[in-house]
Length: 153
Image (spheres, rainbow, N blue to C red):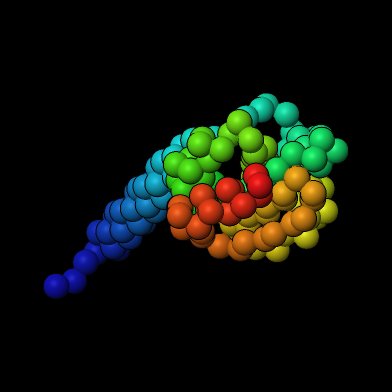
C-alpha cells in the first residue's frame, strides 16, 4: 500500500498528536501520584508553627528531650517514616519536642547543614543532658517507641 504525500503528512501529524497526548497524560498521572504522596506526608504531627531552626535552638537551651525528623515528602522511605511518626509520636508529645525538618523547605537548609544530614529519612534524638543518637532510614514503630522512652528518662 502506498500513501500520497498528503496522506503521509496527515499520518505524521496524527502520530505526533498521539505522542503529545500520551506524554501529557503520563505527566498528569505522575503529578497526581506525587500530589497524593505529598498530601499524605503533610499529616506529620507537629507541635508548633515555629521554624525548625528556632525550635531546635530553644529546645536545646531548655534541655528538653528532642526528636529531630529530617525528611522529604516524596521519597517512599520518608513517607513510611512519616506514617510511623504520626502513629507513634502523639503518645510522647507532652514530653518530647518534635522538630519536623523538610529538606525541600529552603528555611531548613542551615539546620540541615548544622546537623550534617546526608541521607533521608534521618532521626536525631537528644536526651535531657543533650546526648545525641542518630538513626538513618526507616525505624520500626516499636523501635521508635523504645527510643522515645529512652530519651525521656
